[in-house]
Amino acid sequence: MGRQSISEKQFWLQRLSKTSLRAIHILGITGAGGGILLGVAKADWSLYWILAMGSGSLLMLWEIMRDWRWLIQLKGVLTIVKLGLLSLFIPLANYKPELLIVIVLLSVVVSHGPAGLRHYSIIHRRRIDGKKEIKG
Image (cartoon, rainbow, N blue to C red; front, side, top):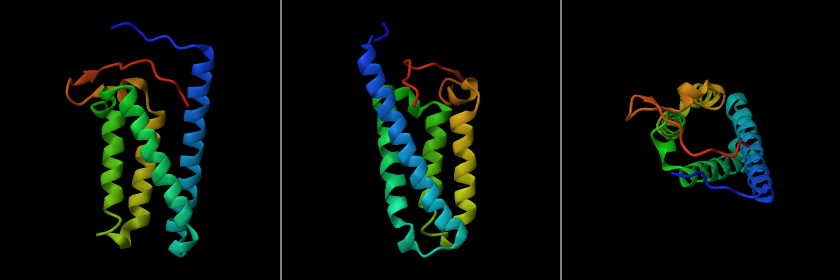
């Protein structure tokens, strides 16, 4: 399978787009997370929540469209686990701060862990490298 070549202009457009989307996601997580951890009224941080969920959904879609193998690599699997933990915010509302802390810690592993861990396939039980990605 050959590597798809993109122009320098396309590369920079993709890179800046993904970086901007990630920045919006971090802003949303920071605002919503601060509200949750500090017990601030939901109305005061709900816009940040919307930013975090919308941008996070777009980042996931970006990864899946780029390479479906993301879904079976640990970075994708742990992202899906984070979504599962987010869904527990409703039945376990009293534990939102604790759930948020676990989600943030998983995010660090997904984003900053070694490539061998992030690219580990739960199906193949070994590292699999997908298509070259545009970092952001």
